[in-house]
Image (cartoon, rainbow over all chains, first blue to last red; front, top):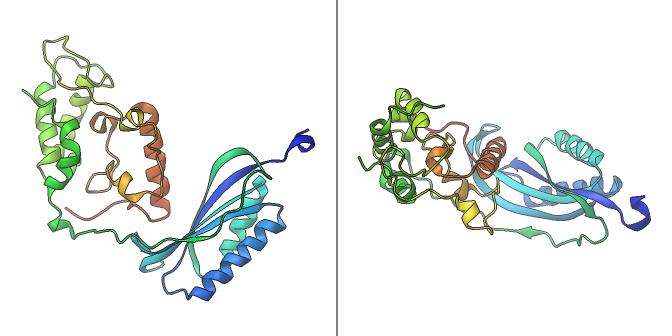
Length: 150
Length: 124
């Protein structure tokens, strides 16, 4: 019944991590390959976001850095499984995670956007010793301490 | 959940250790935790009852600012809800409402899975 009016699909987001030393052309290649997968399964890629090489919170594939890629797409539920299966086959992909963003998205209304590449935000993680507690207090003081009146 | 007779002092101590002591709230001592919860519970800034003023009521920052969304990709924003060790800060401390605390917890767990946030960080 939905077909009569509009095609309702779901919007998903998959984040995948590539090895930090992946050359740019490989990144593009993987991108195109995934785009092909989505199109083949009757979905549509909204956009790829290259979040750049970033420090990971813990070593991934024995490496402290990774290239974060984010892919936004719409499609049927089965698409995710196929998408992830393809990710699993790629050796350069070290980690991935898919999340459902929205349900009942109008397939035709959702516009395709251009791929973006954002510069990695170099998180200023100082060594633990140097990180003062005062820093944290700033954020918390107003909420945490007002009760400690006694 | 209800242990109304104790705890005011413990909370004060716990709160201090959260800010000043080593290791964030976790360092505040297990013993204290229970009573804090019993005393202050979910009712946040419930006034008086036992003649103790609580000061300003904590408000959920996500409820206060509707434009603010919980996003598991936003490392900086989520860090606010983590201790130094990478534990999720409980609702009674962060002041979040139940709904948003739930969203935060989910977001943190998602972020952990893609190595944006640590499962555990550092050693004391």
